[in-house]
Amino acid sequence: MATKTRVGIVGFTGYSGAELLRILKTHPRAEPVLLEHRSVADTELPLGENAPRVPFRPESLRDEGIKVVFLATSLQVSMEAAPMVLEANARCIDLSAAFRLRTTANYNRWYRVEHTCPELLADAAYGLPEFFRQVVKISTLVANPGCYPTAANLAVRPLIVEAILDRSAGVICDAKSGVSGAGRKPALKTHFCEVTENLSAYGVLFHRHVPEILHTTDVDEHELSFTAQLLPVHRGILETIYVRTEGSIQWSDLLAVYEKYYRDEPFVRLYPEGRLPDLRGVCGTNFCDIGFHVDPPSRRVVIVAAIDNLVKGAAGQAVQNMNLLLEYPETAGLLDGEASE
Image (cartoon, rainbow, N blue to C red; front, side, top):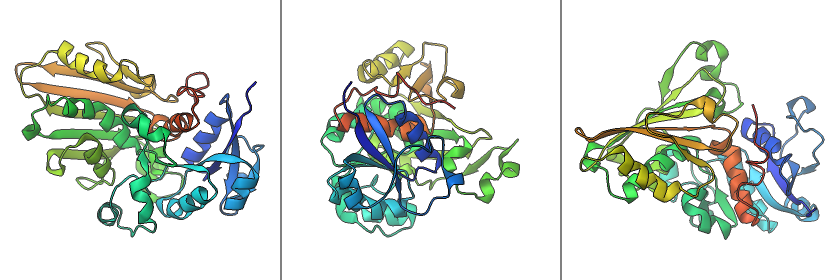
């Protein structure tokens, strides 16, 4: 049996960090190590308490032989932690938004923060493997995409690249997410009594994930209307996207476009005509499911994309990126040992 590579998790008590640990504990080539960047009470520990625990310091990473570190932390903590990981000559996969945008001006506008290590922005690879696989492989710092942008980018980018959309009609994205997307930290808006039997919109027009969609799809801001909504469920994202094509197009023509990009992609599943994805089909998996309806006379297309926000939208995609960095099969630990609810 091949020697397992030691990989560290900072922020292992959060939802994404706990999901990482669950996936990595069944990974055939990786051994997870819990990296403590603050005091952690035993009651906070997720399943898998027996994983090794060491302090998060550059010297500890070197001494423990840790090759890749996942930062499942807040944006502010990741800005502090990423340089420490690189100092230890380990590779870093950041699950926060700290390195997803290209300019400090974007952070000031969308996140209302001053970026504390802007020198790393140009070096970070945007970790959407289906489009940036070759860049990820050679990178030392990978910015794991946001959950909403992952589904939106996979659904929209092929249509933009192939120039089949009527850009003047805009792109309307109605996105709904389970409550775990808000993180584990208690907040009034995610209190049980606020969420149950309810549906609410938030971040209208100025959601912080918008710039990721704009940058990856090359859609202009005035073309995109993105609305996030909170579902009274634990996990999952379902996005319904409305566009128009330049000319009349048949369902089979659109399928051919998607197949051009995703025929050989292990984690993108295209639905047959007449069927659309739902949350149940993706929860606990690293798949992005895409289906669509077409009305040729009006040139209208409705696309539905579904992912698990904690897996393909966070931890699963991070492991997919780790596999690329370490030159393991991209599906390792994700198809043979999928995360479960």
